[in-house]
Length: 416
Image 1: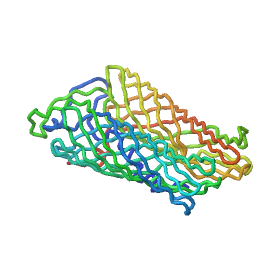
Image 2: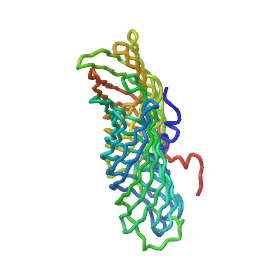
Image 3: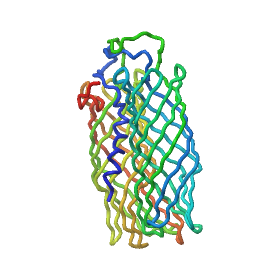
């Protein structure tokens, strides 16, 4: 059974990707002048991309017996968005992915982390060119356990919390130091290794390039109203959805199918994102979603039940007034519980994969829009115990969603 604590802070990542930051009553039919607060004398506002490097140290408790301590350096990249709630308070989101040489061994076991990533909200206090912030959200990792020549994949998903300091040393450049703590939860299977429970800490140095038009020398009496122009689809949104999912789950031993199931069922969930209308007809955005329900199938004594799934995706589309037609793709994950009677295998764990799809969204008015979306996702897990085992999930999802054009702080009426 999936543990709620894994998503308590992990769900923050969904709010993160809304650009919960910004919120304005943005017309949908055509660009139009609106009025909002002018930027402070030194602004952190805007989108950014960057690179980072750091050190990872963790603890992985295997079967309550072996205490592995994977450690090592890593590097990666990140992108995000920041928005000023007031002169000093800043909120935004960040998504990152890291790769490294991270290993830990005890006795016959070795644990390696191939890559990991996070999707987080950042809330900070800005003092001129300094930004002090706390952060929390979703974390995931692809790790492997090896013992006596055997390897076992361990995709894991959990939550992350942390804090950092960022300093803007030039007009568009900033450097940061950050500490993150990740709890990647417990993975259970009776295939040789029964249980793994992983937590980790990381420190990193990062370098960001901001695309916003920083203007540190411009005078400002923040807040002062100043006219700005925004495009029709630009801005944050949050929403709900219902979906129907179906697909295939094959388990192969030595390349031979020992179990073939077709899980299907309903899902419901939430999504959030941010759009940028980069020209009259083209829109780019990011979106995250999480869904809960049951995609289930049983044949004889073999069962599989997918009780949660989610994605972090880019969207790119063509708009003509109130309609938006888009393609989408990115990272996907599922949580499944299964009993494969043919091999006596019982699992309760996450699977990481990828997703692609397409959809159409229609603006009902300035705030509300409805969408219909199709997505295909694929997940694979390979292990080589005495009999090499591979699992494959291929899922199709048809989703109907309703979005509200605002950030979370608009909905709760928060004023800073």
